[in-house]
Image (cartoon, rainbow, N blue to C red; front, side):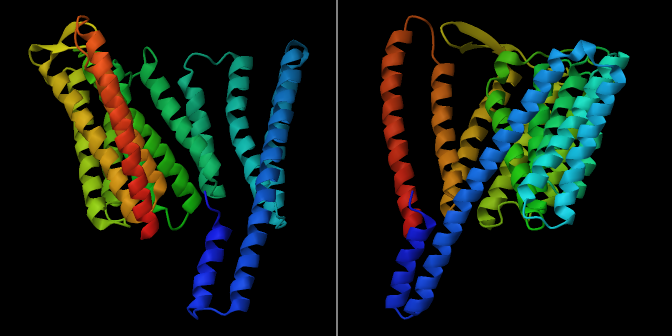
Length: 413
C-alpha cells in the first residue's frame, strides 16, 4: 500500500506545477509528513513492547500467586488485590494529572484496573463461598466498569463494559432458576441482534464528541450483528418452540430489541450520514432485522404457531421444517446479502475501502455458506460438489475483479 508521505509528495508536486503552493511550502509539508511517519512508527513499536512487557509481568505475577495460593492468607490476598487495583488507577491518574506524555500507558493502567475488578469479585466469591448465583459476580463487574468508562472516556474500558454486558445477559439467561431464564438458543441469539443495533446507534451519536469510543461501539455492534444475522440463516435447524417458558423469558430479549429500536430511532439522522440515500436504506434494513428477530422470539416462546411441516433438502439427507422457521431462515438469507451489498455501495460512495472489503467478503461467505447448506441428497452430492466448486471459483474470480474495479474507481474519484 502506498504510504501517506508518497501520496503527499505526488500531490505537492502537482500543486507546485499548477501554482497552488510554492516549492518551499511543498518541501516543508513533505518533511513534516516524513517526521510524523517516523515518530508514529517509534510510538507504535513502544506501545507494542510496553503491552508485551505489561502482559508478561501480569502473567508472571499470576503464576507466582497460583504457585503459592494455599500458603497465602485470605486477607493478604484481598489486600494485595486492593493494592494492585489502587496502584493501577493511581498511577494512571498521576500520569494524567501531571500531563506526562504517556496517554496510552495511563489508559492501559486504567484498563488493567477495570479488569482487576472482576478478579476481585472472583476472589471474594472464592474466599467467602458466594457461588449461589455466579451471574451476580459479572453484574457487579459491569456496574463497576460502566462508571469508569464514562468518567475516564476510555475506549478500551468501554469495550470491556460491552463484553461484560453481553456475558452477564447470557449467563443470567442460561442460569437454571433465574427469574429471567431464556429457554432456547434462538432467544439468546436475539440479544446479539438487539444489542448490536443499539451499539451502532450509540456509536453514531457519540461519533463527534468521542471518536475513539464511537469506533469501539461501532466495531462491537458490527461484530454482534454479523454473528446474529449469519447464525439466523440457520434458524430452521435450531428453532425449538416451547410452551413452558415463563413470563420472565421475555425480559432480556424484549429489552435488547427495544434498545435496538431506540438506538436506531435516535441515530436515524446520523447513522452513515456521508450518504443520506444509503443511510435511509440501512435504517430500513435494520428495522426489518429487528422485526425478524422479534418474530423468532415469539415463535420460540410459543406465542405464534410454527405451522405445518414442509419437506426441505439439506446436506446429505432430506428433512422437514416448519413453515415459520423456513420463512425466518429465508428472510435472514436475503438480509445478509442486502447488508453486504449495502457495505459495498457505502464503501464506494464514501471512499472507505474497509467497508468495500467487508461487503465483498460477506457476499462470498454467503455464497459459500448457502452452497453447502443447500446441497441435496447423497446421490447427487458428488456432481453438485464438482459443479458447485467450479461455480465458486468463477464467483471468486468475478468478485475479486469487481472489487478491484471498485477500488480503481474510488482511487480515480
